Amino acid sequence: MTQMAGFGGPKPAASKKKAAKGGPVKKTKGAALQPKRQWDVYRKLVNEQGTVPASVFALVPGEEEKWIEVGRVVADPAAGTAEQAAQMHKRLILEHAVRCHPVLAPKSNSLRCGIKIGDAGDESQPSVLQKVEVPDSLTQQACGFEGKEDPVSGYYCTYGAASEAFTGGSKKLGMGGF
Image (cartoon, rainbow, N blue to C red; front, side, top):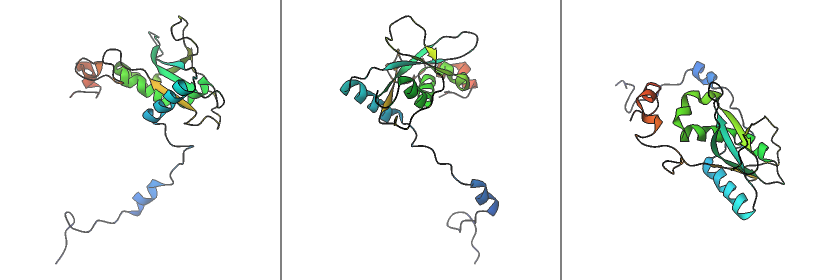
């Protein structure tokens, strides 16, 4: 009796070509930053230790350069600076910008990160975040990021038919369309 591949049959052996393609796995410097964990660290540093946060922004370079406030970062002063914390959280900051402002999604690869240290209510413009070296002392437990909620819904991203992600133009871009 011959067995056929499929349900209940033996699995075909992986080809040597496919097995060799995988190659060694790169090890990263630490675990990836998680938004919830970094939010908890942010709240601990601000509420329990009284550390002063800095506002972070996103900018689409080009025709109409307008800074969009995305949230706040904080760093334990003994471990590093706000600029270093923003550099460490840059991926989370820009992902959060796209999540809360879906109109930025087509331009997500060209977004720039900005920071403003001091009073968030003053009229000064944020400065573009310059690449800085993040010291080993600035760990995930020594700095945090809190994303700003969507002003319309109060959530941390935009939902529903009223958002730009669900307009006809965005369906052509592969976003939304539910």
